[in-house]
Length: 87
Image (cartoon, rainbow, N blue to C red; front, top):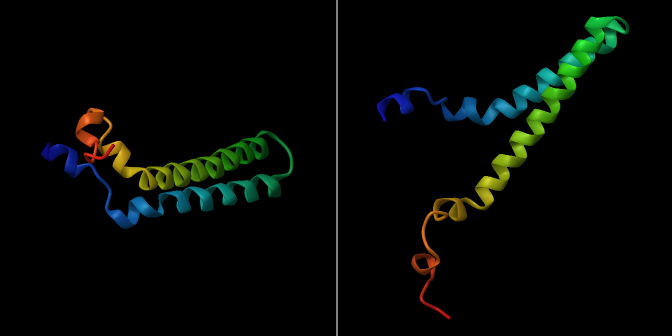
């Protein structure tokens, strides 16, 4: 368990990862555009598109997790234990 805590990123670094991916993706797209021809241009363009998409996916997944955090925490419990005692 102590090993798991040592491998985690600090919160500011973790929260900035989608932005870093997006900035890197836009930079790669710009380099691909400037090269205008050849395999390097295609490589940078594809890498840039992938990085921007990855940044969006990570941001949306984090938002979804934070919105439904309680459901994730209680997913292994039975419905009887989660019930507030109402109807």
